[in-house]
Amino acid sequence: MSTKEEDKLYEKIIKGFVEFKAEEVKRAINKALEEGMDAFSIQENGLRKGLERLGELFEKNEIFIPHPMLGAKISKKIGGQTWIMEGTMS
Image (cartoon, rainbow, N blue to C red; front, side, top):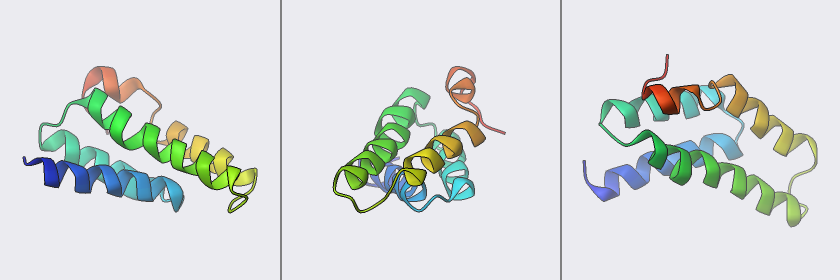
């Protein structure tokens, strides 16, 4: 998989967080894992950056307190970090 394709998957994960679409995040993570992407890289370049982007939007007053909390719920819904250690997501 090329770096460009990986970047597209990371952006799907980040966009899913910002738009509070847990199923899109989950699909993008599954696709990344199927393509052989490293679970830690998915965590760092996708999930963490999605949460960071929510924080940035909050600092700019573009979103409010419930929004970062929804992002945390998405993280919990997709299984927290269990899948990272297993390298699979169901």
